Image (cartoon, rainbow, N blue to C red):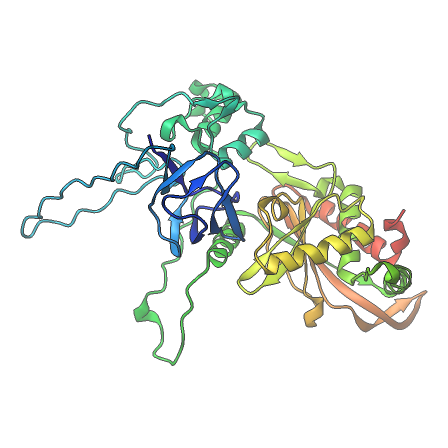
Length: 441
């Protein structure tokens, strides 16, 4: 019997991908762990490994195919000695004259089940009843998204009944378990919804609306599509509050020069951004009310600061994460940041290297930008926008002088962080930058 190999979800935000290259061909024998394909996700190009062993019976999706939905069958894998059954297609009757065109029913991205066209929220019944999730050893079949959600919510996968193909546990099963545990069914209808109302998306630009001016068009990459979707959701659903503060950098720049003199023999050269990452991380631990994440029913406060750092690539921004930045040494932050940034530009990051941060930082000082307001990276609670350091008139010891000053703006999720708490964080960040030995203690 053939095993259906489906397009995997290789990152938490992946809904579709590009099958960039097949590393096997029909007739090849593969074992668990063998590389089978290169798949371009919304953030990186990743290698897809086999989890079963057998013979490649049929490659269903050709390499180079764009927009392959997660869960789509891309290959059939046979047990050794078996052959793939041909995929039979039912003959379609010739349409009658003037008959309306048949429109394909929309499909739920998570479960691949048809969705009612009258009400997109109601799925049409599948051909068979829900199956119990099969376990291979102790492993319960579940989608990567469902596993991540279950871990975050403390739901045991073994206690759930999967509604996906072959009893696979999907997102809806975990959400249902959370809702059932939180409140009885009889009370559900009487409690107000905590979900933000849907905001209609703007109508897409049609070719007829493009001005008749010489131009060229570039196909949107998966990364650019994801950036557009997530930032639109952030600005529509997250109430932003912005707080700006001026920071004197003279002591920090002197400390950086001294540290680089001592670290030169080890091949380490600290950037100003490395010190900004450290200062933000320490400030978040000092002001834990800003190191938070908002959920509809809970406010999550983190015990450490993992900082997502905005890195510009040819296709858009990506945010590799410096984990445990509050306790990491400056040399470690610098070394890791250089490695992550280089692999981000080559699209070689692993999903765990660009997801899971507790807050973000975006530095545009190297472009001479004095001050800007960054968009929050959901589901995080804040992002710090760092501008350029420049010589400015500044009051020093009650006298007007010249100092190197930088403007920094914090964007805060006002559902989770009050203005006074955000101001306290900005003050803590300023104090650490102006007396930088405090972040090394």
